Image (cartoon, rainbow, N blue to C red; front, side):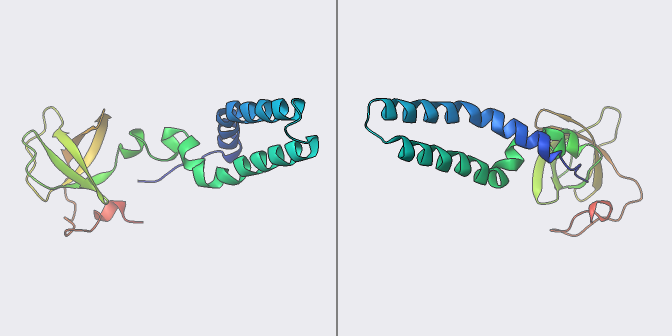
Length: 151
């Protein structure tokens, strides 16, 4: 399952847009304190500068939360992924993809899937995967990813 790199400039713009209301409130609060002479103008500007620098410094930490779903995986990122049936899927059960276990159902018209069979994700419906058995694939051992998804 490959991830498409996100456009960092667009993600940063989205981040700034969401941070704008808090920055405006901080600016208004500081301006009010300066106006009422509770705070010097210099100290108000320094505090506002620290606020803005803090917002920019947090971007690398919070960046992934502002990327579009398809850039970091999301539901569509699972389509085509391969996993292992951890129990019989007749028609529903559990599938392991990488380190995660997902609720799964067998696609309409497909035969029930035995435990340990390699499956391929056809689509995602909410938090449930629609899968079909993978033919001719090597079955990985517990804790291993299926051969086709190793990178």
